[in-house]
Amino acid sequence: MNPWDGLLYGLSVAFTVEHLIAALIGALLGTVMGLVPGIGPVSGAAILLPLTYVFDPLTGMIVIAGMFYGIMYGGSTTSILLNIPGDAPSVVSAFEGYPLAQSGRAGPALGITAIASFIGGTGSVIVLSMVAAPVAQVAIVFGSAEYFALTLGGLLVLARIMGGSLTAGLLPLAFGLLLGVLGEDAISGDARFTFGVREAYQGVSIVALAVGLFGLTEILRIIIQKGSTPYVGSLGWRQLIPTTSDMRNSAGSWFRGSGIGFGLGLLPGPSISLATLLSYRTESMVGRDRHKFGKGAVSGLAGPESANNAAATSSMIPLLALGLPFSATLAVMLVAMQVHGIQPGPQLVTTNPDLFWGLIASLLIGNVMLLVLNVNLIRVWVAVLRVPNWALLPSVVALCWAGVYTFRLSWFDLAVAAALAVIGFFMVRYNFQLVPVLLGALIGPLVERHFRQGLTAANGDLTYFITQPIAAGIWIAVLLVIVALPIVRWFLGRRRKASLVTTANEHHPSV
Image 1 (cartoon, rainbow, N blue to C red):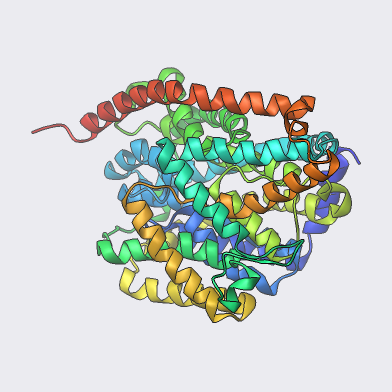
Image 2: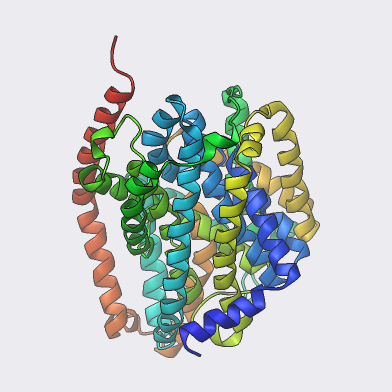
C-alpha cells in the first residue's frame, strides 16, 4: 500500500477506545515524569517501561511513544520555569525560555513550546509515513554482510560520537557487548560468562538493564546530590496565551526548526541535541526578534522546540525500517518492542502492518493530545513541580523494582539492576557514557548473529564482509566518520563554547 493509504489504515487501527486511552496515558505519565528535574527522556522511559507489560504489543508501543513525546515536553517545562533542563535537548530551551519566565512571561513561553512541539512532531509524522516504508523495502535486499557492517559499524560510530574520548566510548561499549553475550549460547547451548551462577544462564534481562542503568542510576544521583525542590510560582489562565506579536515572531521559526530537526534526526548520535543547537543558531541569525536573543526571544524558543520533536520523530525511521536505535531513548523503545516479542526491521511493514502503521498514526494522535493537554494543564504541571523529592522518589523506586521483578519473576534481575545502578552512577561520575553500554547489549547479539550467518554463507571466508558492494560502502562511511569526527568536534566545540559564554554573560552580567 502507498504511504497515504498506510497512514489512513494506521489511523483506523489507532482510533479505538483502547488505543486512544493508551496514547492519553502515555502522554500524561510521560509529561509528569519529564517534569522531575534530572530524570530526562531516557531514564523516564526506562522507569515507566514496566507499565507496558499488561498491554498487547501495539498498545504497549503507543504508551511508550506517548511517554517519549511527553517526557521531552516536561523537560522543556523545567528548563523554562526553573532553568533546570530535564535532558540535553532541553538545555537550549532555557536560553530564551528562562529569561521569558523571569520577565513574567512564563505562560506564553509554555504556550509557544506546546504549539512548536505540535507543529514539529505532526509535520515529521506525515513525512515519516511517506519514507519509512520505502526505506524498509530497500533494506530487504540487505544480506548478512550488509547487516554486519551496519550493526558493528553503527556501534563504533555511536560509541565514538556519544562517548567523548575514544576510551570513554569504547570501554562502555565493550562492557555492553559482554552483557549481551552473557548466558547460554543460542546455537550450542554452552554457558558463557556465567561463572557457575545458574540464574545467569538466561542472560541479562533487558528490562533490568534499561531500568537499572538509566532509571535507578538517575535516582541514585539525585539522592546523593541532595537537591532541594525549587519554588515555582502560580500561573493565571490569561498569562498562558501568546500575543499576536509572539505568534508572528514564532511562525517562521516553527517551520525552519521542523526541517532542521527532521534532517538531523536521521543521523546516528545525539541528533536531537544537535538539531536544537543548530536551530537556535539559525534563529539567532534570521529570527524576526533576533535582537532580543539572550533576553527572551520567542523565536529562539520556538525553533529549537520544533526541531526537538521533529528530530525525535524522524529518528524512528532507522528503528522501524532497519531495527537500529540511533539514540538512547530509541534503544529503550527497542527494549519495549523486544519485551513484547517484536523485532523491528525491513519485514515489519509486511509481517505486522497493524503495528507499523498503527504506531506511526499514534504519533500523530499523541501530538494532538499533548497540544490539548499541555495548553490546558500547564497550571497542573506547575503544581507537580512543587512535589518534594522525598515524597516522589520512593514511589518511583518501588515502581522500578516491581517492574524488574515481574518481568521474569527473578530475584537475580533485581540484583543485576541494583549492580548496574551503582556501576552506572560511577560511570557518569567519571565521565563515561551509559548509552554505549545499552546499545552494545542490545545490538551486540545481532552483530554476532549476522557474523555467524555470513561465515556460514561464505564458507568461513572473512573477505565476504568487505567485498560486498553495499557492505564496503558502509565500512568506508564508518571510517570517514571516525577519522573526521575529531576535526568536526573541535570546530563545533569552539563555536558552541563561544555561544554559551556569550549567552551566560548576557543572562548573568557581572556586578
